[in-house]
Amino acid sequence: MQNERKKYAALEARLGHAFGDYRLLEMALTHSSWANERGQAGQHNERQEFLGDAVLELCVSWELYRRFPSLREGELTRLRADMVGTASLARKARELGLDALLLLGCGEERQGGRSRDAILSDVFEAVLAAVYQDGGYAAAQGVVERVFAQDWPRDVTPQRSKDHKTHLQELCLQRFKGRPAYSLLACSGPEHARVFDVRLELPDGRAFYAQGRSCKKAEQEAARLAVENLHTTASQS
Image 1 (cartoon, rainbow, N blue to C red):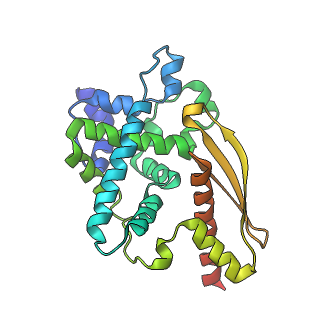
Image 2: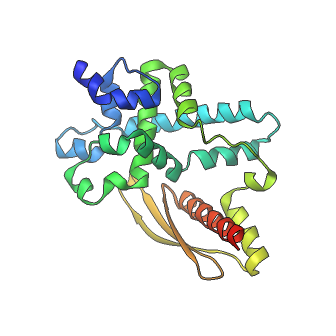
Image 3: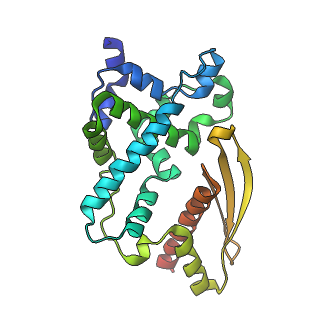
């Protein structure tokens, strides 16, 4: 127990939660590739990922519901999608140091799995599930509020609340009199954990690439990158 406390002290401080059962956290940090290479089938974080996805959605939904009493369901849904997308969760995983703590198999390690957004977003969800299992809903809600403290929307306007693909299409029609084009480049990974790679091309030829757990999520992420780029270049001109 003492060794685990030392090993995970920094993570617990960032989460704002001290674990009573470190086995839950260790499971959350174990990728299936690590378990399979050691003949420990099922001793990995995929079930916790499933639970953590639901816990995260509830915690973020409640906080958005509380913060924005005047927003309608569709607007709240879009705000939540912005916060719990693959890239956002992977960034949070890195901020928490989960990439360094993650237990990966040798093959996945060689393929750069430690830096893949899809894997890191999954481990973030699994760790949140471990917090929920260890301390209940209040503990999980507290972690979400703490980890996302600087990410809650502050200035919500109708334009900002649109999904990224809709927003991008409107921008392209305004600026280029054309529409963005999406193409699926690859689909990899096991059937239960597919990763989709998409390419987005703007009418002016600029291209953006993104990954997601579904083609729709990958397209939304590519559209988000394109929207940010268009707003940045417009403010600089």
